[in-house]
Amino acid sequence: MSILPPSRGGILFGLGIAYLLVQYIYVSYYNEPRRIDSFITTTTQEYLPSTNSVSIMHLNVSGIEAMIYNNIQTKQTNEKQPLTPCPQTPPDLNGTMRLLVPAQETLEEVAQQLSWLRLLEGGHQEPLDCRARYKIAIIVPYRDRLSNLCTFLLNMHPFLTKQQLDYSIFIVEQFDDGLFNRAMLMNVGFNEALKLRDFDCFFFHDVDLIPENDRNIYSCPDQPRHMSVAIDKFNYRLPYVDLFGGVIGMSRNHFQLVNGFSNMFWGWGGEDDDMASRVKAHDLNITRYTPNVARYHMLTHAKQKANPKSFFIT
Image (cartoon, rainbow, N blue to C red; front, side, top):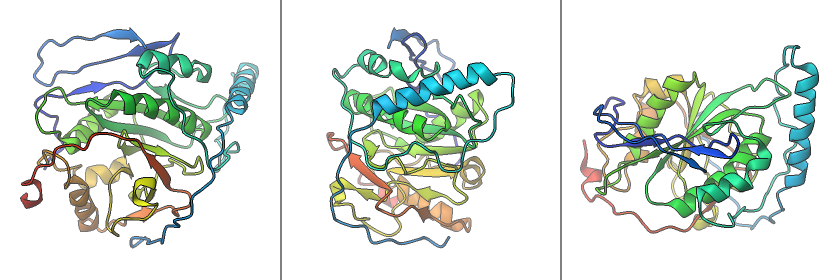
């Protein structure tokens, strides 16, 4: 299937903070007038995940604040000098980190809590004192999970900022109340993101998955990478070897090579396995970090309605 936009879909253009401004941008694919509102606002590598719980450390917010302040001072001093590439391994990573929870489940509150990060408008951030090695887009299919979205944004922005990435977060929302088409929304996010910036790679990310280890680097993979290897809901074990869902990373070229996700999967399930088949059919390999690093917490949410016919799609 080609990478086509849905008949009814919209893109919620990330959580961007510029003077605490968060913008919602809804895009029509029928050229119908829609509102634009502004609010405050190599071979698959197999691992045997450990079932041992990992102690959770508090996120060193004050340390990140100091890092950002120092970076701003450095940039003001050397803004006329060309920036050197950021180090291959970011210097301020601590390993495990605790889950941050918004004081109130509103985007306005999340914007306030993230104001210290000095994020750029439109869900974008980039390092100030070095040149990012990667330009990445985080594509998040979304509908009716405001609580998950607030927690996701509150955790992901500090996480990605510490990794010295040039990144943007795109929340792609389905308008109607019919069966959810996660795959189609991710295709839409890919297409719309490329209209804004020339991204090197894309991470397709469920809104309910939060990384537990900041050494789980969202760098551009040489081969398609399954990021969410060890999820607490599954006792940090990989449910099956060919799993390629939850969070995955692909280069722009590889995503175009496999022609994106199939648009045929309405309702929960099936699109991830189909993507794994596409990857293998093009002689690409699914790679993974070790499970002690690629650990995720799954936020609670109501189970989505499945389409019993999705597994009979040919």
